[in-house]
Amino acid sequence: MKNTNDHDHIRCISELLPTRDTLELLSGKWKILIIMALAVKGPSRFMEMVRDIGNITPKMLSKELRDLEQNELVTRTVLPTIPVTVEYALTDYGRTLRPVIVAMRDWGVTHRARMTGKAGPKLRRKAA
Image (tube, rainbow, N blue to C red; front, side, top):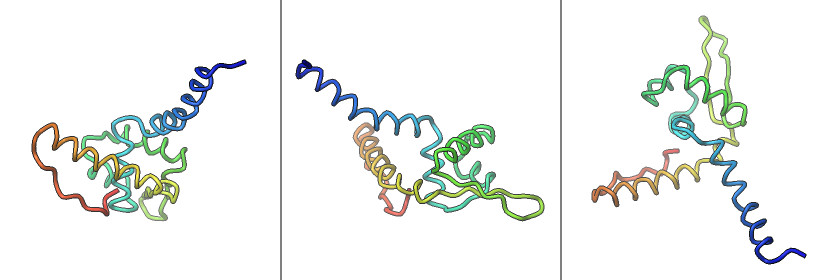
Protein backbone atom coordinates (compact mmCIF):
# COMPACT_ATOMS: atom_id res chain seq x y z
CA MET A 1 0.00 0.00 0.00
CA LYS A 2 1.36 3.39 -0.98
CA ASN A 3 1.51 6.08 1.61
CA THR A 4 0.55 9.73 1.20
CA ASN A 5 4.15 10.75 0.47
CA ASP A 6 4.24 8.40 -2.54
CA HIS A 7 1.02 9.90 -3.90
CA ASP A 8 2.34 13.43 -3.33
CA HIS A 9 5.58 12.52 -5.10
CA ILE A 10 3.73 11.06 -8.10
CA ARG A 11 1.42 14.08 -8.25
CA CYS A 12 4.40 16.44 -8.06
CA ILE A 13 6.19 14.66 -10.91
CA SER A 14 3.06 14.67 -13.09
CA GLU A 15 2.58 18.41 -12.42
CA LEU A 16 6.23 19.22 -13.18
CA LEU A 17 6.52 17.15 -16.36
CA PRO A 18 4.61 19.54 -18.68
CA THR A 19 6.62 22.47 -17.32
CA ARG A 20 9.85 20.58 -17.93
CA ASP A 21 8.73 19.80 -21.49
CA THR A 22 7.99 23.49 -22.11
CA LEU A 23 11.32 24.61 -20.66
CA GLU A 24 13.20 22.09 -22.79
CA LEU A 25 11.36 23.21 -25.92
CA LEU A 26 11.93 26.94 -25.31
CA SER A 27 15.29 26.72 -23.57
CA GLY A 28 18.30 28.66 -24.68
CA LYS A 29 19.04 32.24 -25.46
CA TRP A 30 17.27 32.51 -28.81
CA LYS A 31 14.04 30.54 -29.24
CA ILE A 32 11.73 32.91 -27.39
CA LEU A 33 13.32 35.89 -29.17
CA ILE A 34 12.78 34.19 -32.53
CA ILE A 35 9.14 33.50 -31.69
CA MET A 36 8.66 37.10 -30.51
CA ALA A 37 10.27 38.49 -33.68
CA LEU A 38 7.96 36.41 -35.88
CA ALA A 39 4.93 37.32 -33.75
CA VAL A 40 5.65 41.05 -33.93
CA LYS A 41 6.84 41.34 -37.54
CA GLY A 42 5.06 38.42 -39.16
CA PRO A 43 6.61 36.19 -41.81
CA SER A 44 10.28 37.02 -42.31
CA ARG A 45 13.19 36.02 -44.47
CA PHE A 46 16.24 34.49 -42.89
CA MET A 47 18.61 37.48 -43.10
CA GLU A 48 15.85 39.83 -41.93
CA MET A 49 15.60 37.71 -38.81
CA VAL A 50 19.37 37.82 -38.27
CA ARG A 51 19.17 41.63 -38.36
CA ASP A 52 15.95 41.89 -36.32
CA ILE A 53 17.11 39.60 -33.52
CA GLY A 54 20.67 40.92 -33.39
CA ASN A 55 23.80 39.12 -32.16
CA ILE A 56 22.60 35.73 -33.41
CA THR A 57 24.83 33.96 -35.90
CA PRO A 58 23.27 32.55 -39.06
CA LYS A 59 24.38 29.07 -37.96
CA MET A 60 22.58 29.41 -34.60
CA LEU A 61 19.45 30.90 -36.19
CA SER A 62 19.34 28.02 -38.65
CA LYS A 63 19.67 25.47 -35.84
CA GLU A 64 16.98 27.10 -33.70
CA LEU A 65 14.57 27.52 -36.63
CA ARG A 66 14.99 23.83 -37.51
CA ASP A 67 14.14 22.87 -33.94
CA LEU A 68 11.11 25.18 -33.85
CA GLU A 69 9.97 23.77 -37.19
CA GLN A 70 10.31 20.17 -35.94
CA ASN A 71 8.13 21.11 -32.97
CA GLU A 72 5.49 22.61 -35.30
CA LEU A 73 5.90 26.17 -33.99
CA VAL A 74 7.37 27.63 -37.20
CA THR A 75 6.87 26.96 -40.90
CA ARG A 76 9.54 27.27 -43.56
CA THR A 77 8.37 28.26 -47.03
CA VAL A 78 10.64 28.27 -50.08
CA LEU A 79 9.48 31.13 -52.31
CA PRO A 80 9.56 30.75 -56.12
CA THR A 81 12.06 33.55 -56.66
CA ILE A 82 15.46 33.82 -58.29
CA PRO A 83 17.57 33.55 -56.29
CA VAL A 84 15.54 31.26 -54.05
CA THR A 85 14.39 32.89 -50.83
CA VAL A 86 13.02 31.25 -47.73
CA GLU A 87 10.42 32.74 -45.43
CA TYR A 88 9.64 31.70 -41.86
CA ALA A 89 6.35 32.22 -40.04
CA LEU A 90 4.68 31.14 -36.84
CA THR A 91 2.14 28.36 -37.14
CA ASP A 92 -1.25 28.62 -35.45
CA TYR A 93 0.21 26.32 -32.81
CA GLY A 94 3.23 28.61 -32.41
CA ARG A 95 0.90 31.56 -31.85
CA THR A 96 -0.58 29.75 -28.84
CA LEU A 97 2.64 30.69 -27.01
CA ARG A 98 1.68 34.37 -27.18
CA PRO A 99 0.11 34.62 -23.70
CA VAL A 100 3.03 32.72 -22.19
CA ILE A 101 5.60 35.02 -23.78
CA VAL A 102 3.61 38.18 -22.98
CA ALA A 103 3.40 37.07 -19.33
CA MET A 104 7.16 36.42 -19.28
CA ARG A 105 7.88 39.80 -20.84
CA ASP A 106 5.55 41.61 -18.42
CA TRP A 107 7.14 39.85 -15.46
CA GLY A 108 10.59 40.72 -16.83
CA VAL A 109 9.70 44.42 -17.05
CA THR A 110 8.44 44.37 -13.45
CA HIS A 111 11.47 42.44 -12.24
CA ARG A 112 13.92 44.74 -14.02
CA ALA A 113 12.21 47.78 -12.49
CA ARG A 114 12.33 46.16 -9.06
CA MET A 115 16.02 45.34 -9.35
CA THR A 116 17.09 48.67 -10.83
CA GLY A 117 14.59 50.92 -9.08
CA LYS A 118 13.55 52.32 -12.47
CA ALA A 119 10.17 52.11 -14.12
CA GLY A 120 10.14 50.03 -17.27
CA PRO A 121 8.81 51.03 -20.67
CA LYS A 122 5.10 51.17 -21.34
CA LEU A 123 4.04 47.79 -22.64
CA ARG A 124 2.30 47.43 -25.94
CA ARG A 125 -0.16 44.57 -25.98
CA LYS A 126 0.56 43.68 -29.60
CA ALA A 127 4.10 42.43 -28.96
CA ALA A 128 4.57 38.66 -28.95
